[in-house]
Amino acid sequence: MARLKVAVLISGSGTNLQALIDACAAPAFPAEITKVISNRPGAGGIARAERAGIPVQIIDHKAFADRTAFDTALNEALCASGIELVCLAGFMRLLTAEFVTRWHDRLINIHPSLLPAFKGLHAAHQAVDAGVRVAGCTVHFVRAEMDSGPIIVQAAVPVRSDDTGESLQARIQQAEHLCYPQALKLIAEGRVKVDGDKTQLLDEGFTEERRLINPD
Ligand code: GRF
Image (tube, rainbow, N blue to C red; front, side):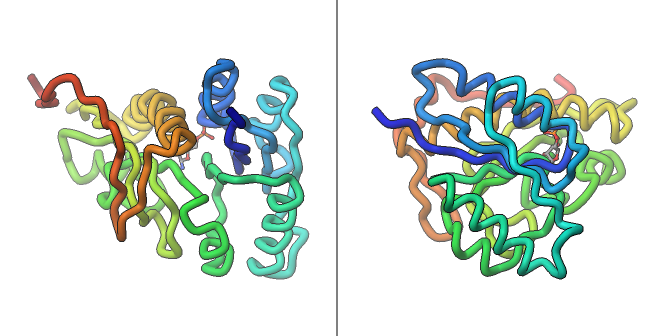
């Protein structure tokens, strides 16, 4: 069966990109990364893509007059490569409503909180400041409003009393590296149906009821 052609957009170190690369390395995985785009020439994730033999394109936002011009270049690069699904992985640019509409239900993002809580930057710091006991991460379809859209996969991550934003962020990232490949797999298998503001998962496959109580 043909594998879903995926582009990953990055701005930084690319640990989520790495998790997706590792998942796609399994021959049975139903998706393949055929392009990585970075808006920052110095992004650490570029080397990860190159090591995996994935074509990398740098589209430096600073070279464009405005967001629309940048997003147009982005769209052209994706279309030229026959991309079917776009994964944002630490991509630190807000996308225009036009771009988001064009990639409706074919554009996903990972965010380090249990959305809809703690949108925006420094979500782990926000969680520590708010004193929540359970934080987490979310993979969701992208809509024009920042950090919103139908949720595909979430993971809960316990918050410790001595956590800093940094220590919690590091723990959340470990969960992200499980969630993002899982969400990509579900989509590529055709098991995610968008239904209004939510998704329905076909064959969810829960084996037991589980609870996370923190502290336990
Ligand atoms: C992740 O925490 C992700 O949730 C957020 O940006 C971070 C990217 O990290 N959107 P990395 O570049 O994948 O290591």
